[in-house]
Image (cartoon, rainbow, N blue to C red):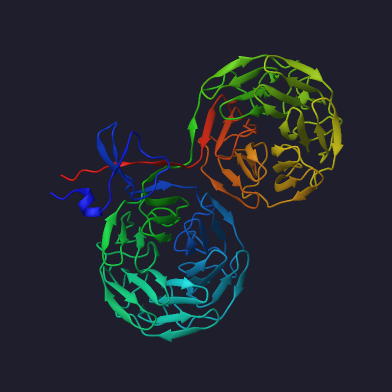
Length: 609
């Protein structure tokens, strides 16, 4: 029997524990467990953040961490909406020049092309081409073969379009066209006329497999920039799914073999092998980088358009998808609370319920809620910032019956609350950021108007600072005294505004994807998270958005729709806490904890028997 040294020419390391961090292909002998081990890839799909618009048969381009899609079938209707994916969630891009679905595309997120498809009225087949620069779609020259359900791959200056179905002279196409960034040119046809093939690669090294025309195909072909050659067939006849990769490593998934499919196959340059299935069968769209990384988003399940996203990894790192999980219930049900701290060390104080304003405080240690010392006076719609043992609660609505707007300010030292210097401007529904000795409050409502007033706190005194550009109340605040963020709010209309503060001025930022107020927040100005709240016309929501300092994008939703919630303003965008709130009709005691995607290195035992 051959030894590992004879096979590989290398000696195996003897280690008492598995290496951390690891490297793909590493092999070692674990002397503690007595096992030969290695970091070997494992294929799996895990859930990602939903798209903002459920749709199918939409254009897709880019990579698994920088994808773009536009158009699609909403059933009923078509859309011009564009969405971009950053590896964490979806954000809005510039609208397409014309609504359509079954349109194709290729390129990267900041240099993409879409063409063909179906457009209203009718619908009729379309041939218009549009180019995307990462923010705006610009009309280009029409393709030659006006069709729908074609297939495509490549980059903006070297793309390929093949096949499709043409309604004007009904039939499936074998035509191939190349795009040079300006013009489309007909070249050699593919041997089999088909629509909705899986295609990927480059202009001079492309792969096309499957498709329909009529029926579903398994046939595979390769393209060298001039000619088509017969290539290896896929294992399951299907089309209309997601695909991507190169001529030596590719991935296809989902599709339509007479019904939505969840199957996936990977390509090693020579043959196709079945790999891990999608969690949800569907067809419509998806992209992949290689046999090791794929992204499925949207699509049609057979009964409804989808917004769900799934991510594929074939690596020794097992990814646990980001999600909200139930935590211990609070002691007291209430809404419009204030809070401070992190997911594992938080304090909630004030708020209201059927007994109006409350003075109770509760502390959370990551597992249990405990009664804390009461505020000096009950209030609701306060501002809160700081940590679980050094917090500030200011402003709000006080007695009688939560109708008096106050400027009262209290500090918490870990054992008791004490009243200190009042706010310069009494207000309720204010947002806040920072720590006890370097805090900032902004916005809110005075009697009777909304305000944009901003004040800084040094642990003793309040000082007026530049006002918000948009006066509003009940927005979400996170960050520090010199790098703060406010998102959403009302004036009294629901708003999607966000603004950033740099220590000297507020600057308008990118709007939220979901207009809302009375939501929770966690994180920093460049890595923030907002969750829940009240959206137009008066709807409590579960939706969550993340901010990277430039763009808002989707994140996994909460389990329970509610507004007036508390958050973890000193937490992070990947470790957050939401509690209390109004679930209509009951006031809530629920707690939910958010944990972002967590990759875990997993070593496999190697058995030569």
